[in-house]
Length: 563
Ligand SMILES: [Zn+2]
Image (cartoon, rainbow, N blue to C red):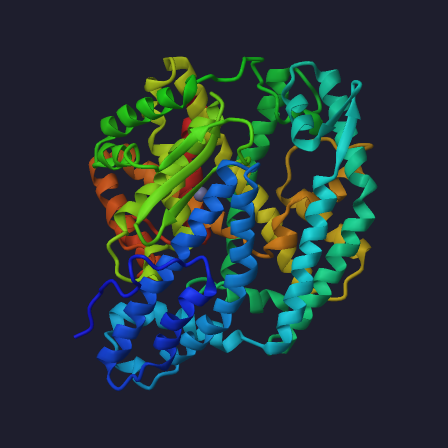
């Protein structure tokens, strides 16, 4: 019988291809005569892949911990340029050896169906002639990122980046907000044509890729490529309708309340980020130690073994939290697949959003910890639609325990902020997803038609805001959404995950113990089962339709009205 074992030698240095090649060759050339042989091949490959994945993770992590470390950068780039490209054809050959094997049908079905159906899609969609198109797309995406990254604004005597400018939109002084907003958008509009040009070329290439693979349009091709076995483009459309029907009205009511609280009529685009009560930003902690201590107490108080899991992160080198010069921006959780230990990276500076990032990434780490014993590396990762349930649930479930960081009033403020995020992000996700459905099912459209389509969506899903005199900025707003350029159609995953997270929050309000038990059950499955089953095991419905959205909207809205 096949069994999980350490196949890769413990001292194998995965940083060079030459060290890996003999082991991958052995897998490629190994005779497979029985289903047990095939299973052993899958397990051994998984062990070797995990070692390579951990090597890549460690090299990447090192570059983000110190962006000035030239040796770390060279090591990472060396891996990306020298090792990864050589491993790709080997991986593809192994995929074929496994999925196309006549013995695949004799593998234990419940155990391998998810792996096999994924491998089959990769084989089915592979087209040699699409490789140069993908290279050109990657270069275009880089050009887009450079165009966006280069944008600066001279404002009040200083040259500032766009993220620096965004802070002015939170200022209480309305005149200052308006000037900042206008400066930001004037700068963006300078590159509007250049970005349209990049996008037009991307659309042509993507359409061609889809045609090469035998699809009518890129939307259907990409849905297949993302292995969306459990929902279709039509399901996405019904989710847009559900959001339009149940969440847009809440969003617009919140907009009107905002206008009332700010004593402004009408609300303008520069009035959306300021605190309506003119309060100072929340300051939950000082220093990473306080953040970790507070989170540990909070997770212990929540029960369900979360505190114990969180505390394992405090041992060994699992956390790099504090902001310091030379650190890369942002935050992430990365599972090191061979040692099976998570790593959390962030830039904590004592802000509320840092606390949100911490509990979000802790949720991902819980997922890594609970699924780490699966012998298949592929099954130790869940699809984004469920992986983000693990993390976003923690943003919500920790809310009643924020007393570790806040006064009672500040707790209510943090809770309200998170609940308001539900309609806000869902309406934006629907806008971006519906836009792409239109884009890719109308190949060859003109820029004017594209603008019309975007305007119609702004009307359908947008805020209750007066755009008079600023229509150009509204019409070009999609150009800021980097997913449209580098990761087409990758976005609705977060909307689906949010429906799971809100359900988890509702479940916990009724029965915290049962909710956390189900949370653990669902997470422990990793990516070994289809999406609807992952949701079900976590006590959640997997549903993109209006009925579920209405229930979620009703419950969230009841809290928003109360507060
Ligand atoms: Zn996440």
